Amino acid sequence: MKKYFSEKNALTVMVSLFCLVMMFIALINKQSYWEAAAFALAFSFSIEVVCHRAKESK
Image (cartoon, rainbow, N blue to C red):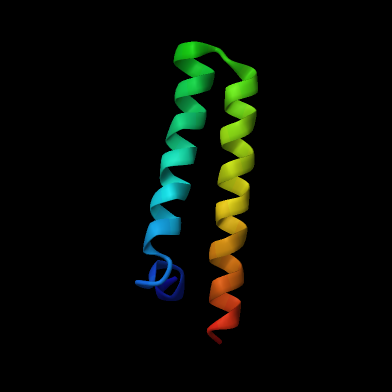
């Protein structure tokens, strides 16, 4: 778990958390499915980047 929260991944992890929170806000408060889908795709991509970087550093 520590390898995912390295200094190199700090900004990407913060972007992932932001996208996750904004996805829920878009669904619950705004009820905007297009906006929620966009944040879900951004969240998915940022998680993929974090996992790829963790595999590279092995």
